[in-house]
Image (cartoon, rainbow, N blue to C red; front, side, top):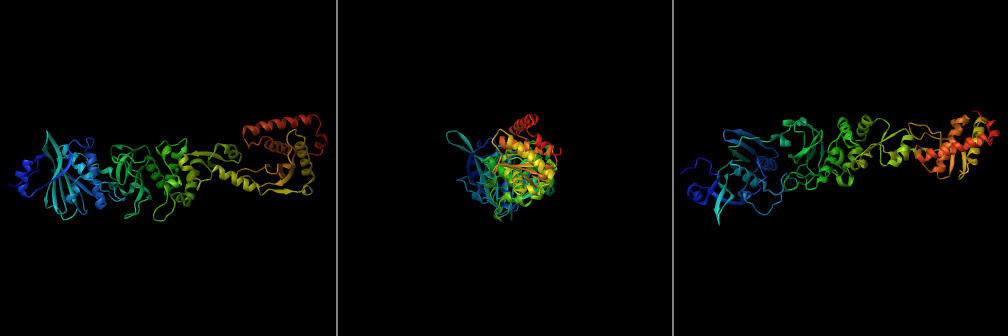
Length: 499
């Protein structure tokens, strides 16, 4: 008897022996019962079939005919042993799958839903069925009927009776090339160099952005961008990363490689604290050097990609926050930064250190200012004009008259600007306990007195500019100067001063 139709979804051993075995069909009992993996539906099944196709051939084809949906690849084919369910056989690291069991579970889920599954592969033809077995009751276990036949190349799965979605936009390989707006090397380089991808694409139903893991949809993400990532391990159910932080580190690797200013502008808004654009990246992304590691082909640290492209990162930073913005590393520098004519901005702590390689930080600004101020050139008294010397004598008298711990000296000096945005009127050295007053401040009594009061307040308070302690110390010193002036303590010097 020639069998021209699909076998029943549930086949008994008696039916096999009577109807199918005489036609040359062999029976493989795969093992799991029909109740296994109840949570699997059409998407999970199609996902696993496509995953195997991509691992085989890096591409797949799909379509519908009068019988249902078909999915095909041009790989090496599926061996009979591949249909057996046994101890996990690990796939290579570069594969999209891991254990090679998804194909069997996919068939089980589809047959359980009432579809017939027909597989044509190199040298053989296969029907997936449930075999009814009676041992203390009845159980349906997954089985396969196969015989020599099939195709010359590749594998073709036919889901007969299925007219639902093919989920084509859940596979990154189906997205238009124009949707890939940036790429960066992943940590996988053998046998194929894999690239993480930044994606901008409107998916069907406008469902928002997505994370693809090795070309295959994993989950949605609240972000203006979608991602296709390769360098983290998936949890067994493929719905999440095995370690969530590994996913965010891989996203960090990708952003280290982005070189378009307009994309980096949006990234910086996402990681600004508080976020200017609230996304999942805002609180989760990691660009820590040790966590990202090195790109395997060149051995270069991913963090160094940011350093190499510092000019575009600085341009994006400037467009967002202005010329005078620096990265905040600690609140203690806020007042000093402001005094130097800059403004501090916080970023997510797991990106801060890497971004500092390209963008000026508060610490780097203060250090540069301190380096400049080390270039102070003291001017001997005999090189000053009569006017400058008169103002300097008044400044020294005010410093000596303070009832606090005395400074060791007050000197005229040429002081370089503390930054490219502010000039420096005076300076206090904590090392030598000396006060330096810029020559231009010594041209007038008012500017001289203001400067020496400001620097004495640094000496007595130990605080930085714009800190509360420094402001309070200035008030105390100024009050004392006013009191002594009214008492006539500086009358003789006042006569020589040009106000």
